[in-house]
Length: 84
Image (tube, rainbow, N blue to C red; front, side):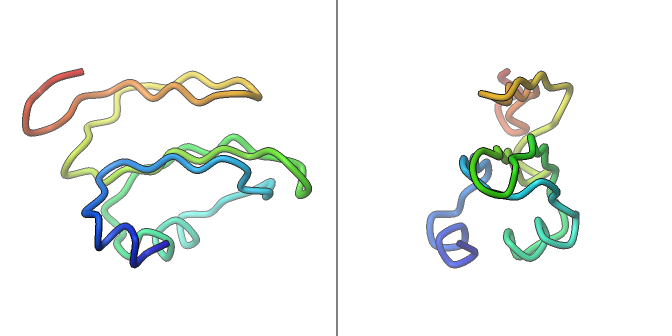
């Protein structure tokens, strides 16, 4: 995953079916390969479900979020364009 993020120069990533109840800073930092990130996790039950939104803070300025079992809506701005 980290190689894909680096190769594609990803700034915002959404992963579904994380199949994990808890995500930690350490796990997200390891996944992204950098610690200048923000993230929101909506936990699964170790067999299915689990959503993760993760972004680089230099590209996306987080404001708020809303979650249900089926989605994570992340509100913020693209830093360079200041577009929501």
